[in-house]
Image (cartoon, rainbow, N blue to C red):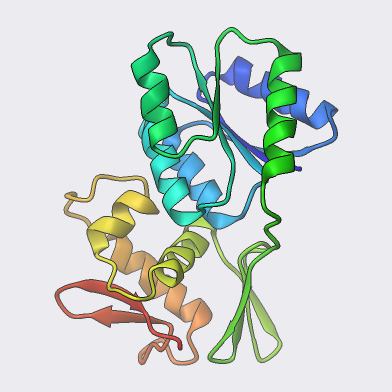
Length: 224
């Protein structure tokens, strides 16, 4: 399986990576909530192991955002708290299971394997739109035989716009859901990132057909 570990405590994070790697899985690790969201939006995982207490974005918020973007991706939450309210809140936001610290390695492996067996198969996503092949799993865009690398954040933008292609997505929403920042920040980070992205994926960045601007509202997926 491909497993994403989101844990800020370095010793535990490294231990989890070693545990799952030793069990034969491919593991990616993130050290805070924002990194976890970015990684989870960029590529599909068979299981996400997510700590509740994280810097930048807490585990419940990370869970909410990943569940909104990837409804079928299993999420197991780690918590040091014994409060039933915290567990109920995590499960309410979409976590499939939880394990309370301290936990045994055998129990955690058993829970992760069980989630992986229940997960629906999710193949690497690829879109062929307006003459460009977007490969979200490989983080690439290819047009007319020329291949360009995409960053996880750029894939996150494309993925979010495509998932919500029936409506306009605001800059604030992209800041929160993809960049892991507060939506009320006064920044041009979204506009700058999309300007760079258009140079990679659009046939004519000056007249975009995939990532289109909606004046006064934000951005929308323009491809049919």
